[in-house]
Length: 434
Image (cartoon, rainbow, N blue to C red; front, top):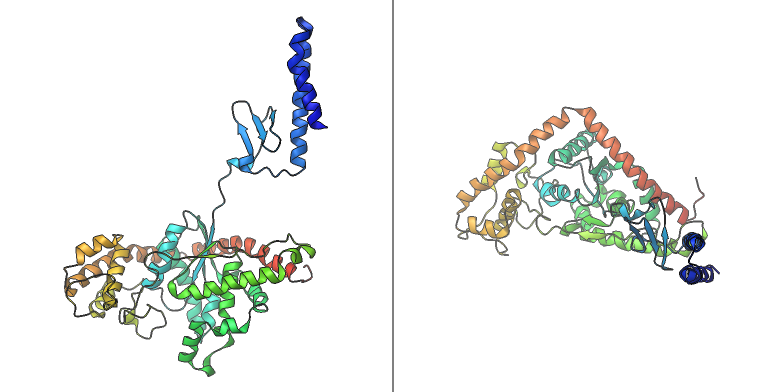
């Protein structure tokens, strides 16, 4: 009916000059145009009400004439006020989550493999960086040390350049939804999936069965909760963490299948997928910094020898001593990517990352150096790079109220998103609404 009226008034409007040439014809033409325009406007409103789903490409605002075009009906309506739409809003940024355990000291591997990349990511993504203190209790630990390390780790995040105005920085245990979702996910996780985790096998073998708690077996489920809770698009991971992310992806798909879609909708939910299935984000370099005493082992907080790692808060003399004593080889010159020279590749990669030079530039600069010369160059580069971080760290820890405010605000932002997700899961799994 709307279309026939539009056609009728369109015919009258454009035929008006044929039967009138006086002042009345002009008035009649104006009246018909007004009615025609009004009907067009009603048709536009009707098509919106019928949910023609006006997405950004379908709603075009023409600034000169204030026109709005609905492409589903080719209607153009002239309006006197601008039409509010989402077209002027900034595009939704993809979301990234990542965290570091507050066990031991943050070392060069944590920094170059994770935290340094966060600084770049926070400018282009919606980022959540947290201190995963709940993961720190899977093995025996010291409670006082955990308390100190949690604050120190948060301070190091900020000292390294994580900006709380761009990223949410918080402590994992301050957002209770992490533990709630972990328990819900545990009910859907086959035990066989956890038994195949390589890190569980390695750590349980070292600690002995009598000293291993259930948390060491189930912490990959907590890691999955950490990621899925925030509907993450991407997760920065090292090569050794890819298996855990794959478990997270499988678990998300399993829960979506078991409880999502029409099953969730029948329970009053919105239906569809409960969780977004995240993708890995592996940096091209620095994803895995190796030990100073063994080029085939990852630099780790848990290694018994402090000589195996450069801690971010190590003094100049300590750094010089560790580099001087680090493991090298007897081959002439220095080179990347020789499988027989893992220590050489590791030290060159560290130098490349702290100087910001390209791989080619480092190869040309250091290719003909001997180890004695290169160790001095590497030491100077490390000291120069870490000194500003150490200065900033001392400033942050001296103002405890600032650090507390940053962590509290980060936890509030995180909880706003996490609570929505965990409530959806409760609903989809059939729990009575709170």
